[in-house]
Image (tube, rainbow, N blue to C red; front, side):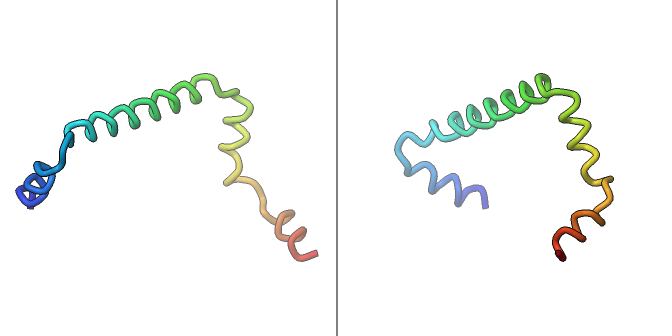
Length: 65
């Protein structure tokens, strides 16, 4: 299977740039995500982490009315 992909990719001009571009995209994405996690306020993280544990009865009653 790999030889079919490799054979098609060899015919594309300047194909060696695509792995580099994808590496840079993922690298900057995860660096940005890491920066956001480090600088996020603890109150926000606590509030978001408690969302699944909250009681949904208030939200369900509001939707019915």
